[in-house]
Image (cartoon, rainbow, N blue to C red; front, side):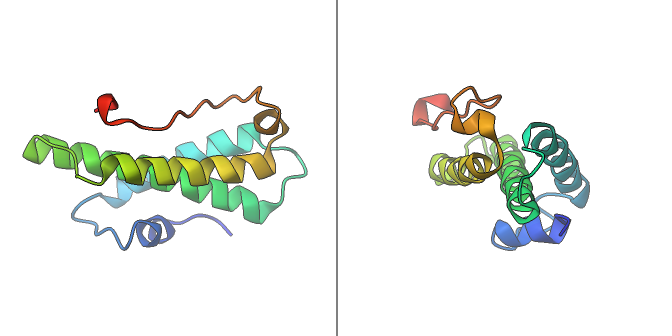
Length: 119
């Protein structure tokens, strides 16, 4: 499976294209694909790899959406910290399945939980 724009939209509860463009989502898919493929084990299960790419693309797309809301309204969505934490945790779970580095805590990725002070 290749992660598609529609996959990311569905993951984010059918996020409409008037909130985030296809181009923005495709950019995040491309970046997530390059990143995950660079750090995954050679023998990683492709389903897990695709799920890691989807989780990372959804996380980055949601953050783009939230930044747009902040620009328009002056405030982040109320659920932003919880949503970002949930998406990051899911991405981390998939990384644990496909990378030795992440399992050994010598990870290329350091993702800390959000706190309201980060915003």
